[in-house]
Length: 285
Length: 316
Image (cartoon, rainbow over all chains, first blue to last red; front, side, top):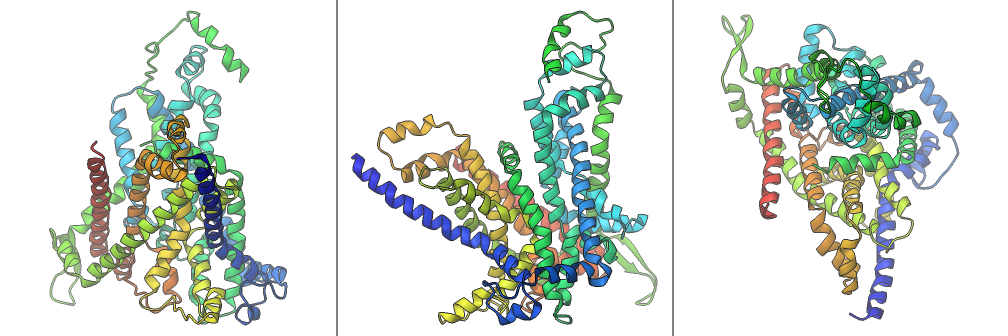
């Protein structure tokens, strides 16, 4: 093939590629853009004006309505979400790291068996667990409490899998040996040597688990009846079911969706590199 | 960090009580337990026990002593619950619906994801970082909120998309009986394309550049390199994303549940999981457990079956 034809192909290819990506970018951005525009409008303008164009700027009024509606229940939901997803993922990451590190660095009987049982857990869909958990928790009086959502959320078999891979790759055995010979106990060795080396990996594990909890709608829906315990997703879902009777809720649902989604998008974009290392490791299987 | 780096010199020096095997790192049972238990105990209680409990429940039936108004008790019922699942027409129609959804949505989504990943891996495109972030961004949005966002774009009263299409003479009904399944499929596609793309893209990035050099010197176009060289190399990642997608499709709940709030064309038994929840809400936990077990078994069979099929085809 002669050189000019390759050049021509790549110029046409460049235009086609860019056009296609722009089209896809519009598709991915459209709902978010709509949300931004809609959350600045008064309720009456939602149906009366073009959904893609700004009209009367009412964002601050909408925010005020959102956070004062039903005695500020939305703020409560936001705090609950932080508790479930951020604290849950933090605790989950710590226990996954300890277990994954032990699986990678200690030689003990039944190690491979334990690891296969945990790996099997990766394949168990979390929605399949919610109903039996509900029955078990109602027998123990845990239903309709924070713990009913928090406790199952801290368990992430995938986190242990990632922690094992990362501990294998990031923590050299010699460093551990020397720390031990210096007289450090196993926990001191873990927290002073391994933890620091594993930190980027732990951020990745944290992010995955955060998304899993943030996304898990079925568990809180099954477990919780008390509105004051809801995470944002369940709260907005409940509101959305009431719009036929209370159409004014629409504006708060839209503003509430924006308020809850934007910070997470920003954090995701800032921490992008951690996703890629995790996804690369996850596909090594 | 520097103090750690200097430590290996210490290691050579002989020390007093050396209880562990050299180089092996075989600590006492108590130490292992202390590391493993904080994860394993909740894993046992909130993963393994519920799975066992669901299995046990699925073999139980509620019986009544002394006629219709007598006291009820549960007893071993063998495969009675499973028999009921397989005779339930609502179960089969939910499976059929989700099957149709999966056969169309999963290939479309993964194809788009693959195209984006390949484009981001060529010199053809500028502003790659921007496009990568934009495609991945929906992953930050929970399914419920994504479905709420899209339901506004589907709603005949509020949607600018419907307005636009009305303007050119098309009158779409995104929530109509034929369309609503695909409206739900669109929400899933929007949510997960970027995630799958990033898995494939990470795999592409780990291919050494030299592999293409020879093909390039031979004058192979970017197109040929992409489909003949890159795609076969990242095939394991494509298989992986397919398996993830099969699992996700069979679990579908949040998106149709939200669309159900604005469309009468989604029943309470639209997907297998919605059926399980509806049955459980009617206090028939044993039947719900049997449905959950059947969904889980179908999930296992399909994902393992797909992995076997693809590895055989590749001659592995």
